Length: 453
Image (cartoon, rainbow, N blue to C red; front, side):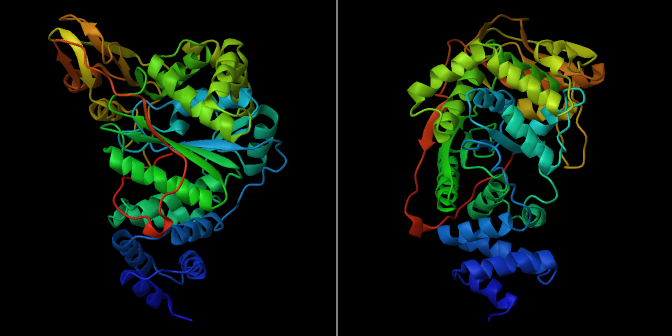
């Protein structure tokens, strides 16, 4: 048997690690036999040498089985989750999970918090008074069984190896590695006890994948490896060249997600929710095609069934279900300031990165994992791409804790808008769909940004 150091050297030299060798490495790191600095050396070797599909599947399984794999066998039906790689204004999970559950597909969802310029589902849910995202495994399974969906944070026992390895990647410049990203995402998602997974891979200025090529590489790798791990996986590559919807911030995004379930959400947010919902109904066996799935989703919204599932989930997780019919019960900011246009014309672009960073500066996001967020603050877009605006008309509305904060954000928010003499054509929302693998022998390598939940 080779020593652990020899296994590190094997990957350094471009060798292929077996499933048993990868499992041994992950186990030794958890036990302390393999030191952090040695694991860091291996991660750097993977960064440069890549991993083939078999290695990536083995790493995913080793990280998955480093903790608990939830048993949802008591929940009837095919369990389907959705994962987004992160974007600005991406509140889709909050309306999507109850909508799909209302159509008969159970949705167990372990979500994450925001980091950097992108928001996190848990932070948005915690804007609901009393909402508890720290439920134990038994409560999680019970709520999925009784309500159809439940949304919690990663517990200490879900893929603990991923937590340890990610902490090293974050400080050793090895985050941008597709096989490591794939293993990180899938180990957490497969630990939920799901049967299928739908991925929303965001592409553009407001995403971590800036180019279609990078997004395609990551989406393809996720689908290929997830399928090899025995799950049904598909991915949509969706546009993030502008904020999704009209709000960026926790309470105001939660309010907007609720509006979708009342049939009143902004067009792009509704379109993204329905596209992902179609994928989930097909994966869950509730529809044979998108053409069959779309009317079911629309009917669940029109009948109020989806909003009712959301209210039941909120109540089951100790939150105030009255927010579903009265979003005014969500936290509100004490200072609301309009940002006026200094020129006139059509909005041809809204920089999502600048809007996201401006929201973080207001307190809606965090730059370190240990920071708290302010649920009430954020940015509301009163003009979006394609709108005509006059000089002095509001482009956006800043929701702030203090007047000084609003004034400080105003110039940056205004600069995020670009006006032109004629409307510009917006890109398609869904850019591509990934449903199958490519040359497995080619392996999985190359740069791609960090994963988000």
